[in-house]
Image (tube, rainbow, N blue to C red):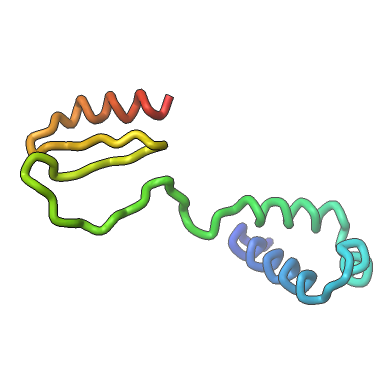
Length: 100
């Protein structure tokens, strides 16, 4: 019995073959004796599966900062400036509040 990774690879290859064939899904599946519902299910599964973990975090290059602000975080138009000795627990509370 194939492993999950082997199934993902197999169905990824089948879906790529279908895309390159320019056939309808129905025609592609009929010619290859693949159940249409199975093909559509795998197509949906693989479409939802991220190729790499996605994050809303964007790493920005470090720039020269003045001594009053060592880092700035911006989320949905809200900017938080952190000074050198900022409180991690306060920052955690702020982030938790933003995510609610």
